[in-house]
Length: 235
Image 1 (cartoon, rainbow, N blue to C red):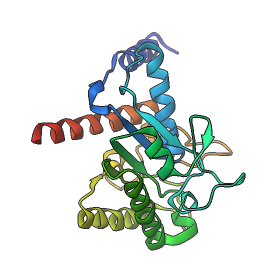
Image 2 (cartoon, helix red, strand yellow; image 1 turned 180 degrees about the vertical axis):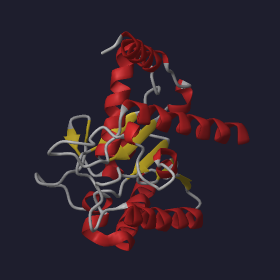
Image 3 (tube, rainbow, N blue to C red; image 1 turned 180 degrees about the horizontal axis):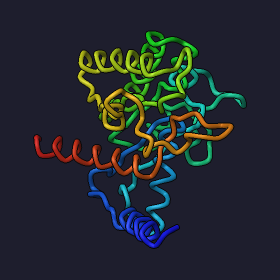
Image 4 (spheres, helix red, strand yellow; image 1 turned 90 degrees about the vertical axis):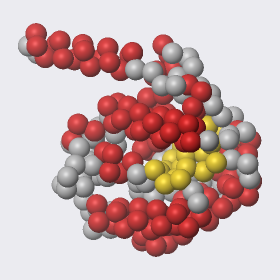
């Protein structure tokens, strides 16, 4: 690398290390998701090494292959339910056990190819209902599925199917009074694809073009901070 490139890398690293969030915003929060949110957990754990109260006491219920569909399955050795306190649990039970007051859900990218957009949205609706029944005092925040890199689209999973799924979920959130957070638009370019600088798996044998970089996680969390701050000030 040239000296200018070294300087840019150093500046970027320093930016990640110094970035902080208003910790109280994420008190008693749990994030539910698949490998997209798993990256956010890794990002949070990395920051907590230097800043132990990063995102306050926020917890993560994540599994790489998780979807709303398989989250509705019964517990078994083969099921992909996340673990809480070292024990695999149904999501509604894990949320209740966590004592979370704020529940951020992002699921769907593992569903649309299996169930189609409408059934995937129905699965999310059913799962959310179960979570609310188990934790009636919690506040639900439904996050959109994030975009994918141009050139990585497949027949059943592409920006059109993702956008259709997101639209169904957004309409349902409006009907039910849940907050819908449009993370898709936040990370998408003018054509609707994931910005290349936000993609951590653009090339290679396992490249899916859907997973996020640290920079994308920072943009994501900044958006959540702004949303929660505005929500708090409106009360």
